[in-house]
Image (cartoon, rainbow, N blue to C red):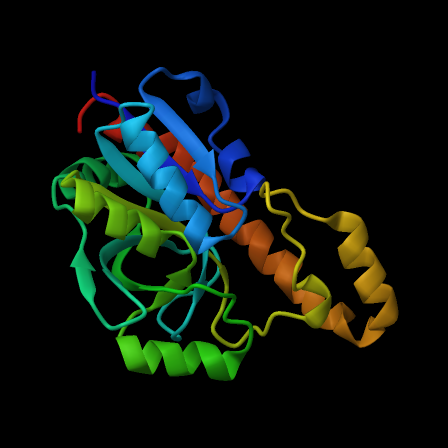
Length: 231
């Protein structure tokens, strides 16, 4: 049986998959925004759950002006921290492009950068974009790429952009993701109460996140089903 393994960073990304979570052709793991945990999950999906392909799925940050919140990015390659370039599997391309065309969605085919920690400010994002030539960054795709290459199975990354390159992560939002991928709401509220100057940045972050998750929902409804039972 062909089974797609999906690695997400947070539970909200997993939840966006909706009814697909009940499909026997799909298995999901949530890393809690930890690259090391994402690598472990990718291996578990293959070795324990029999997944025959891997997908890094969720929201990402833009690291150039080429992407805006709400854009949907399909990885051409993952640029690892040491500069290694891992090409994604071309077998996914016609399936996703055909599904996108039928749904009226535009896929931005770009390189994505791997990060082991949060890239929180505009200066750091732009520096990463210049160094890697990538346009988006997340903390799971590198782990998925590494394990898929090691195991010799197809993989790709499908990500919705939630924050523009000019949007810095407010201090109040740092550390908001728990190890299980849940959002620590009370921790964030407490930090915001101690740093009210972060409120405008938090509002921008929430607005971008809303656009990103709206697009991620379209991915779950219109794109991910095209991969089930095929690869």
